[in-house]
Image 1 (cartoon, rainbow, N blue to C red):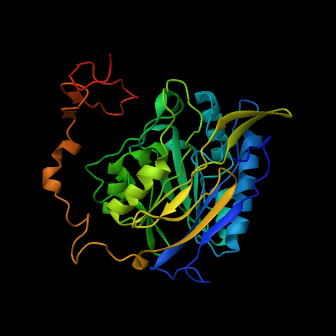
Image 2: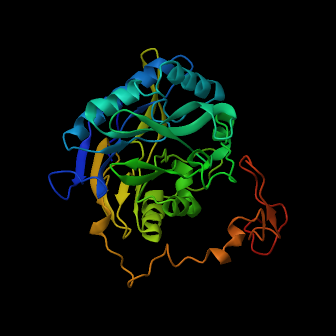
Length: 374
C-alpha cells in the first residue's frame, strides 16, 4: 500500500467496467461512479479550508467522470466536512457553513457541479435542518441532486455508529404511519436517476441487512452506500473492523438481486492547523460496485485515490433462479414479525427491549449460557 506523506489534491487511478461507449439509455440502467479520494477534516479553525479542499476534490472527480459520460457519482460519508470531526461543536460549525453557503439548494455549489457536468450527485455532509418529523438538529446525511442540478432530497443516516456519532448528530425520526404514501416519511425511499431507481444509505446502515432489503422492496435497483470505514483500531475496539465490502456488500446485492456499492476514503484523512498537516484517521479504501450476482463489477485495487466507474444495467443479469422464483417474491413476511417486535429473545440475554432512538446501548444485562463474557 502506498502511504501518502501529506494531503495532496485528488489524482485518481481510474478503473472502469463499461458495457458500451455510450452510457445506459433512460430506464435501462445508470453509468455510476464512486470517488475514493483524499479528505481534509474540519477543525475549529479550518471549517472553510476543509470544505474548500473537499469541494475541489468533488470538482476534479466530476471533471474526470464526465469524460466517461458518468450519469451518477457518489462520495464518502461526511465528504464535505471530513469524517473525524472530534466534537459536536465542529460538526455544527461545518453544518452551519454549508447551510449559509447554500450547499443544500438548487443553484448552490453542489447543484452547480451537477448542472455543469450533466450528472447526478450524491454528496454526504453534516446537515443542519429538520428531520422528517420536524425535529431541528445536525444530522449525518447525504444530499441528492439530479443531472440538471435540481435538489431531489435528503437521505439521513438511520443507524449512528459509536458514542462519538451520537454526540455529534441527532438520530432522525419518521412517522411510519404515513410512510406508505408519503415519500418524505419513508426512511428508505428511492431516487429516480436516469429513470433508474437508486436507494441510498450511509456507512453503518450497510451492515444491517434490513436496510438493503427495505431499499430493494421500495424498488431500488442500485444501492449507494457512502462510508467512512477505518483501517485503524479505534478506542473500545478489540479487533480490527471487518471488511464490509468483502462480506456485506456482495451479500446485499445477491440477496436483493440488485447492484450494491460501498464508497470509502483513501488512506489517511488530515487536519490542517495553519500550515501544519496532521494525520487523523486511516481508512481502508475498499470501495466496490457489485452486480446482482454478488460479484464485483469494479473495485479499488489499492488503498489509493481511485475513481470507479461501472455500467449498472439490470437486464445484463437475468435471475439465477428458476422462472417466477426470486428472493424478493418468495419472501414470507407473515413469518417475520420478530423483525419489528420491540422485545425479542436476544441471544446474549433472556430478552431484550429496544428503545426508540437508543444511543448505542450496552448488551443486555441478563446473562445466559451463550454469552462470551467471563
